[in-house]
Length: 344
Ligand code: UD1
Image 1 (cartoon, rainbow, N blue to C red):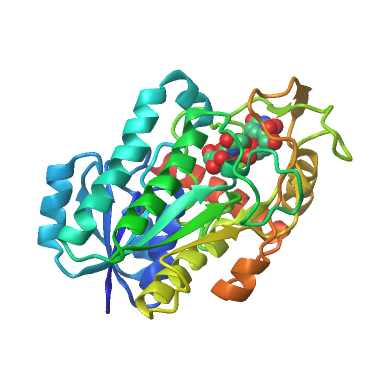
Image 2 (tube, rainbow, N blue to C red):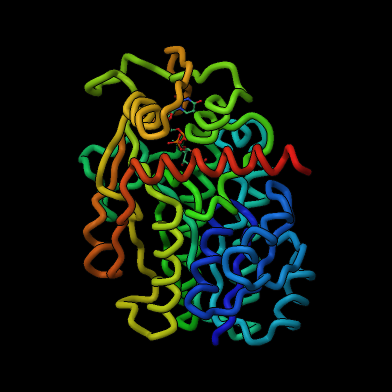
């Protein structure tokens, strides 16, 4: 079966995607520099699929090592490029780190692809490129708004780098996937979101508060122009998201793409507020989340959710998990992880 390179394959979305790729028979090579991930995730993947993916501890910014990696695995037919830094606040403090990590790694891949005869690239982008959309739900042809952070800018520039490169060289093809807010964990609770330090994202903060690692959750803003005053996002189960990558890779390998760059929104089409997430989490899991309403977080978008019909109809992919099941899986993962950490 075809061999796929997954950069950042030990990370949150990457690890769930490796599982789905292996489940349908793809061979996977993971490249990861462990900068924001734990090598034990490989054992979690192995527990689920029975296969330990080949792992190369390489930083994608390192051109020479990436070149050698492609020499060694000369039968790679497609790349899913997750490896990137993703903390919005950190990117404001260390912009050059973000431009180097997120953009140099992409340039390296795009340079190495024709040399090693790899044609297909799936790129992790984000709904952050839309900023605060004028029309909701947001479609793929909505205008790209000025980025609110260096992180967001790396996703916009990354998309442009891909388009410009492909425009100049017909041999490379790409599918750009714009993620909304991935949450939840694999049903086995063997892999899930594992942030280093204090979580920036909502769900890991919720689960860590539920388990007692954090005293209380801060809800950033209660005076937004939304029904309950808190921000609205399109939360999508990470396994649904992972499956979209398998479909995208297969689409490119089968030559079913309609153009050399395609862009899809990956969301559910349903917007939920921060307070709705907290309430639903409490209900389905029977735990209390102590929280406090605090000031808005700088750079937050008021409300955004996807129009997923292009992905539904053209890609043939649809998010199927309910938010209840997704929030259950997030809690099961946190508990399982806490249990394992006690035993270790
Ligand atoms: C942000 C980025 C997104 C990126 C993602 C990855 C922007 C505008 N968004 O998503 O592009 O892909 O991070 O890390 O750049 N919240 C709280 N309390 C918390 C944490 C979050 O109330 O402790 C709220 C936030 O205000 C927001 C919602 O929960 O309304 C979701 O926040 P988060 O999980 O951080 O994701 P985004 O900010 O949507």
